[in-house]
Length: 209
Image 1: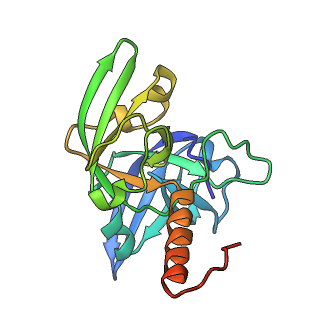
Image 2: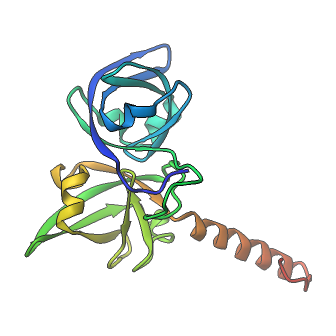
């Protein structure tokens, strides 16, 4: 589990692909202070397992399913990525519960300056929008952010100066893809309501507990 609070921006040092395996070597600093093989690190919001590391970089693998659902396949050497180590029992939950399981991607539609803040509008699949609500949480490339407004196939967020300095989103271009993970609570509520509806349709009257 993660919190959506980015610890540092890393840089892709090398990419290799062979035998259905996509390997990323990522330069970092803070992330490497207590790293171990087998640790989980969120790379642009994707939970990946460390397979090796040095004092300057770590290596992770991504399978075809991960590449199909995320923007990791868009990365090139020198790409900057958001990094967060998995949470521990002592971690402060400053963001929200983030699984590192990306639901899909969105596309940066626009940036708009508002004094020191930046408004960002993201377009995505209408099927994913049912989990995204005004004032709710959304994870964009691993960053826990608050949704401001929504439409049928878009939502927007606003970035304060501190956040702008510590994540990759303000450095992206219009048209670039971002990874999106909706709040897990919305998915659980949908499943519970769906189960209750089925029960009622079958003539049951027992409350779900």
